[in-house]
Amino acid sequence: MTEARFNELPPVVKQTFDQWAKFTSDQPSGESLFRDMFYRFFFVHELGHGVQNRVLSIRTRSEGTISETEEDCYQDEIQSKRIAIAWWREHDEVYLTRLVADFRKIESHLPDPVPVGQDKVRYFIDNYTKLGNDPAAHGWYQLDLVIAAYDQPAESFQQVLDSLPSVRYRRQAF
Image (cartoon, rainbow, N blue to C red):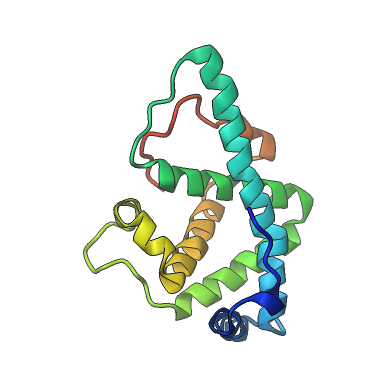
């Protein structure tokens, strides 16, 4: 994980955040939105990736080997978002509710990168690297995954941690 400062971002990225902030009713600038997203929510999300790796490492030492599947990229992302959402529900639910409302508004203005008739999870898995190189598509998926995780039944932070698998993920519907 690396830290980015808004003033050091490429102009096109700054412009994207400025535009996204205009879609919300509470973000006065792209920099404000960026800070709200990355210095708060996605910071915990990135810690969630570390937690998942550590839990899997500990559990697989005592329970056996990790069986890798192609779905890992999707499950890693959704699980990290579940971790962050559970954390923020317990520590600042007002912030989380506001941020997810902003994400819904922003996403509603963005083009859906998933081709008509294709499953968004399967498309994410099959095009993971390509999507990571496309800021618009990657941004759409990040927002969509947060919203999907948020819309799941609420769980405590401890429940989310307890539900982390002891082997790599098998595809689940979200």
